[in-house]
Image (cartoon, rainbow, N blue to C red; front, side):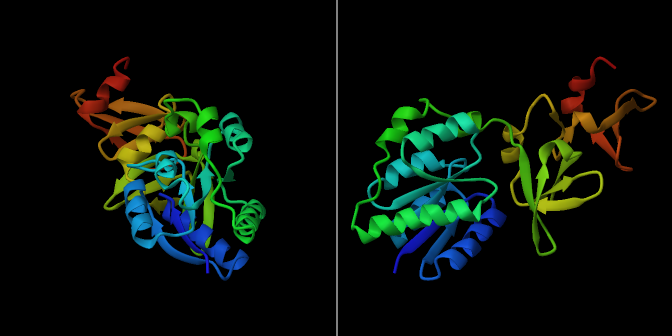
Length: 253
């Protein structure tokens, strides 16, 4: 029986991938799920799976660095939101990869290639051609560009929200609230990890626990003393407070 490890920092996508694997390859045993690279490496060394799914952009140890550490010891399938030009490097390097959001048909093709290699008793594919084609030093966040969509759980459905449609992000206990004109959902990615993945021209941090889409701002007002700024939104009734640390963004007022 083939054993697999999934390393994906978005729990909802990790579960979606696990569910699709159960449907497409019932005999495959998913022995572990990891949400950051260091945890994935620890679980890999403990479980020694024959197949690993690696999210390219993860906190801590990223998927490309992790792939170098497990190269030759497991078949690797990358999971990526990279743009066309970066994906071309995967194609030319003959490396299996999945694009976000997950495409079951592409996953089925990647699994078929893994099965064929196993049937022929071929070793895991060499990743050297990929390293030659990816820019070095490479930052996954830089290659991927700004985040384009967010996946959230709504009831029993996985919903994809385009980042441009989000009014603001708000830290909420152990989670982050993703607020759109008509919905509010929670994700587990911390605000400090989310912030570098957002377009800095469009999303401004205005408080330790708040990042706002500047396109969603209707107006910014000062209190009578001029010491406090309050943001009013175009499509939401609530207001957002600007802390003194970030007030310089509105110094032209």
